[in-house]
Amino acid sequence: MRALWQWAVLATASAMLVIVAATFSPATAARHAFVVGNSNYATVPRLPNPSNDAQDLANRLEALGYRVTLGLDLDRSGFLQKFQSFIGALRPDDIALLYYAGHGLQIGGENYLFPVDATVTSEADARTRLVPLNALIADLSRATRTRLVILDACRNNPFAEKLAVSQATRSAGLTRGLARVYAGVGSFIAYSTQPGNVALDGRGRNSPFTDALLRHMGDANADVHAVMRRVRADVGRATSDQQIPWENSSLIEEMAFTATAAPRPSPGPSRPGATSPPPEPFRTNVVAARNYAYVTGLDPNGDNFLALRTAPTGDGVRIATMGPDTLLQVLESRGVWRRVALLDGTTGWAHGNWIKCCRTVAAPGQYLPPPSAPPTESCDDLWYRRNAVWHRYGYCFASAKGQRIFGNQGCFRDLAAARAAMAPPDRALVDALDAREKVLGCK
Image 1: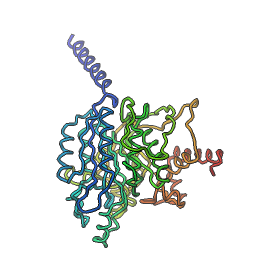
Image 2: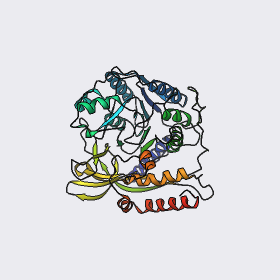
Image 3: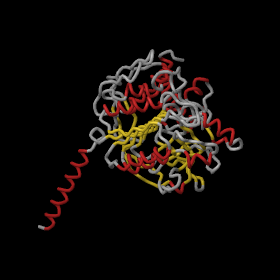
Image 4: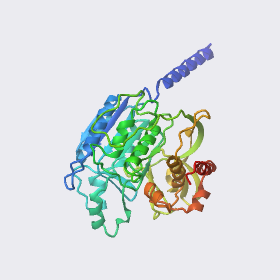
């Protein structure tokens, strides 16, 4: 009788867990947004658009059901205090979105956001006078299971010129634009342009990136990846391919900026020549459970990230930073160093002290269109998809177009080496795209 009672309790508890798990989904979770736009800097010329970008995006997010915390022209103290209040209101099942528009800079592969009172004359100033992006992402990761980070922060930065002059012997660590950042499962990080490049502030009310984001983030039946593809296409057209938005994602479930579409905003005059692409074709998300190593044991009171480098030494160039719980696969060991591959195919070396095995997670597979609904193809789309694979494997582009769109920051392989490093599915994808380009007369 007692065994029967215990079985009934366990069965009831299991059923309740199933019900609780079924009730949570990204579509039903509470949505919170922390939105910052810094335009009026105390020691450098004013940026026209960030305050407009932040205000318009805040209005858009509120229309899409977000609870928005908006900050305009924040100094460092105000930025950090407002952000901690935002973090304190989050619950684990909430969706948290962080948007920043303004000056940003990478030093030695680490990204910093600039408060309006920033006065930076040396790399040492960055840690005490700027806002480290990794610290913000770490706080978001501890507070919620799903984080969206959107950075329109790669504008050409006059602070960089001052630093380069004052740090003449150490400016090798000072690089244009922002560096790649990776975070744990449930993170999505979007950049207004590719890593190592600078973004345009724009001539209208909004930057090219935020203008396109405002136009598409409420599109019906479009997850965040579909929205970014549309944003990328619009920004590429608006800037003649000088600026190509980028993202890193470790989302497991499909995630949209909103559960349902909302009316599109009219924050200001529309950009001449901007057009909306046709609706995305239906795609099936193939999901498979796999074992991954992960980043752990970092000091939350220190940098709280693990560097990904080009070589198995501390002198290797820092390619990116990886936060706690970043998933990866170990490809090779060399002493205490591990050559690893991240979910987007980026490879490099990291210290093995902070890499543990293993976690079994359902990782997103490829998005495969059904045979009855092939995606719309163009030469530009096929070229971009093919070369994006080469870029993920560290290929150093020789063509002017490849260098302009992807850049060669952090590249370390020639054609043969990059192809040899490719996983078989990626190599097959490159070959298929290449063949399709030839059929369409693209090359």
